[in-house]
Image (cartoon, rainbow, N blue to C red; front, side, top):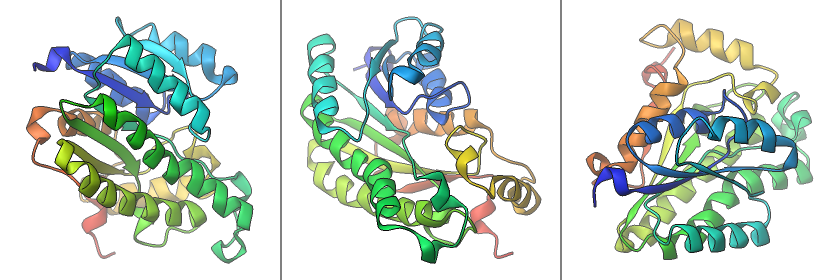
Length: 254
């Protein structure tokens, strides 16, 4: 199957600053046919305005915290496309108040929400997608360095990202016999809608640019290019990995 015949589903488009949008643009340039999801009515108009800029792409509403909506979406995708080759999971959320104080004060409900939306949704989407990925393919999710080292104010999202990275490994093992690869991209901090909820974002961006070997922050297009690589034949031997696209920040001791 050639690259131009591949069909991918992208979860998590909010606006033009979304990493999901950067990935969509790179996959479109590589000839992919794209189904792009947005969360709800409130986000529909901006998402659809963007999607119309990618000829051949289609928009679908799907709140990944709802099993019913996931099931309905994949029924639609099966009818429309039949076969899927790639999934991009660019979804994360925690209540804003959980990203301001100390981690020790994380509420039970805040912990549940962060893990449900940021982690379990990958499992649910992978399970729904696998029956349509009969020719194999790839699943890519987005993580961050706060999964393995303490990043002040990142709090419960760091714990959720650690669970997400572990989920990638377990899913890679389960889905490997079906020739479905599952990987995570650990991107440096980027000013997305989701990231704006982190009270320490400005400090994160400043520290990253100062300490990273490339002495700058990462561009969303660089994350998009890595996702396109992982979903292409060039990434066919890579699964269960966390690939850093952070200008080298993670290699530094201080």
